[in-house]
Image (cartoon, rainbow, N blue to C red; front, top):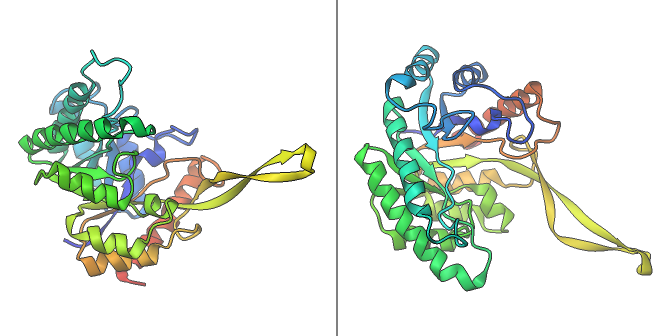
Length: 301
């Protein structure tokens, strides 16, 4: 298996005011733009288990993928396994694992190989130990459920628990489940100031997918009238731009992936406000330009 350019449906989900497509129309859009695979968000307006309760309900999506020659690679779960500290009587982990199980059922019905999950948010030092343990328990249970459907569980380095490369590697090892794989993304590492080549090379053997985005930094300041001056605010704002127009060193990341032996899906996402706005024309322009960049990166250029 080579690296496969993939488009993530969150890019056309309307969640930041951008243009919205149905799942079927998104698959057709991916084909028109030249992508060979898609990742589909496991919530409305795309693939909520509430809207696809059985195998028969998935047929229009399967048909569109067949007609377009598009592979459905990944179904993206939206999890936060540390949610609900204020209401411990609610079985938040069980509820979310059941949600992941339903997405694994949908993934099998669509021929997808992966269900993507996040760990959990954890901003307070006092809760990090309990949060870490809760994520370990949830990830093991979710990996078990995905395995029953012949689907891999992929952990994306997005939420606070295990978000650093060192923490990410430690969390994966602590969970220690053979059906839990890595989905290391360069944008998270770059925003933390990490070494993209080293991180990719280190994690490549454990990876099934990476997801790309690019950003420009916009410095922030607050005016101090008494000083007739400005005070710098941290961290800076970042704004999404097409791949290759931001500060993320994707060439270094892909050099590490290649040398580490990664083969799998390379997804592009527009998952925050995009420079130029959310019109269909601007989204298409960014997705098309980013595909060109992905092809060059895969080829080693």
